[in-house]
Length: 331
Length: 87
Image 1: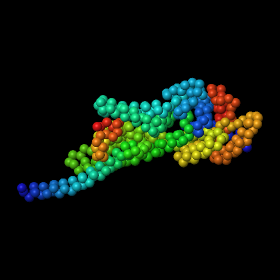
Image 2: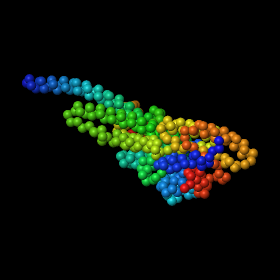
Image 3: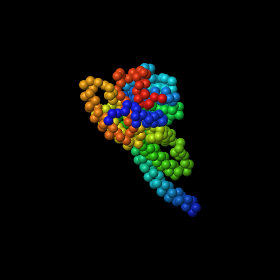
Image 4: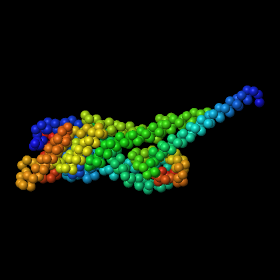
């Protein structure tokens, strides 16, 4: 079967993407996540939506596509289109600095200085950047949700992103366990105290540790709830008609389903255009045809969008516009 | 010492005897629970990953006193974590 390049049965469904409030773009490295995320962001902003395009991929190609640097703060790149580049190591820094300030407030300068070096070490611990990055994404999802019509996250390659999406589940379970223990401890402490003539036990609600833990958990739960809200959060998987990306996409789709995240579309990028000529292309197309059939079969339950390979690489607005009009039918 | 005083003393003794026994049990339980709680907060110490490690940096300052007693009881003379600068 010949994929309908953005027209035909799929075209009307593309607008479903624009009904969402939060979109994640993911896929194997190099399949065109950034291009597709940027193209959808562009289309949405052209329709008068306020869009925030967040690049979390350490490769940060978003700046290159738009030909204008994305900063660590939200900045209007095009009318209605705001860009933000989240740098995991910067976020980790920021977080560690906050923690450090807390310690500095409570202890003598000498002690704080002593601690400084070791805290620095903590910032390079594996996992810290990941959590800090997730924390920032969570902040955006919760705090910036109302400021925009659409939040688009261009994520790092699949494995990383999936871990990120499952993180709230893991961490909040952990924190729940901790705060339960803490509560039990405080209750016990109260019992002991009550045996005295003048009880002085602290009210569990005033325990700073419990308060901090509970605030954390509440935030994580909020993020988790938003991620699983199928009607306004969606995950777009980008794939190219080749063996390895197909397999990775299938795994990703299964994992996302398991985490109850809605895969709202699969974009098949870089499909050879029908008019590509010559022996070389004929043989490539014969192989591609098999993969396209496989994609259609294996991802039958998802809306599929087909993006043809363009004669040039995607760079600059003109090219982006072309992808945009394929992904989302022009007005 | 009249009969009333004696009765009062005896009452206090019995009360103290049982309550202190009960309190000792409670305290033991408290210490055990606290050890477990601290272990969960400082899993890195025993080489296990702690998924919430970075979030716990927030609460570390509140822990300082408890952490000190804990690491002493666990047989570590000096603070095993640099970012917990108790000793």
